[in-house]
Image 1 (cartoon, rainbow, N blue to C red):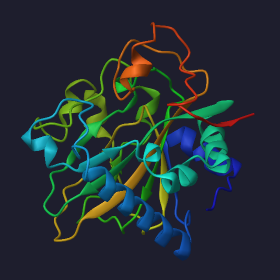
Image 2 (image 1 turned 180 degrees about the horizontal axis):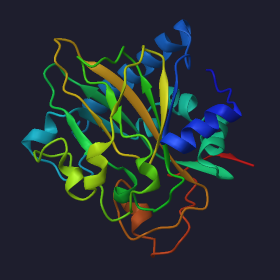
Image 3 (image 1 turned 60 degrees about the vertical axis):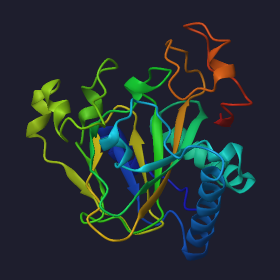
Length: 265
């Protein structure tokens, strides 16, 4: 894994709300990640519903992507890949925090002819509010305009709020502009990436993905990191039941079993 970082990269991330690392995985590493995630998805699908409902689900949303959450809990190989302290250190350095915990992972597979993912902001849905929330999204296949690459509205992390996240259901890809009309004038950045590339994404930046207009699935695997000192805001979101049951608003989310510390200075 290429986890090197430069001051220029950190500056780009903080200015734009995302940072692409084109050479994150080499050929052998990519093959390992692909096999590991494919095997974890197959095992997950065999015993659980593949659609994890975090944000409300309808027929349209079910055809946005197939999503499998917290594969690190059922796959020792996934756990080894994503709880790497070097990866956590890179996330912490970009986000500007002293440490990060894993909130959850999720595999996202856009099947052939899948619907687009509407513009949305992630952190308003999370069980914590933080401008330092950060996700790392790894392309397991080439991602193109044709098969549903990500799109970003650069700089929107600076003006987004915690109360509005946008909808992934059947309301229109630009529905978020009703709440942030000024964003409709921002030229989207189409993040086409080769398999093995990764992109760090601020939890406060607006992003979307196009439809998959091909006959092949487009696979991606993401890790959502939160600051090590993040506090509970009252939302269950993707927290396990046993964690949620013990929390009160304002508690530090420091459950090492379910929200493992990946890196701390």
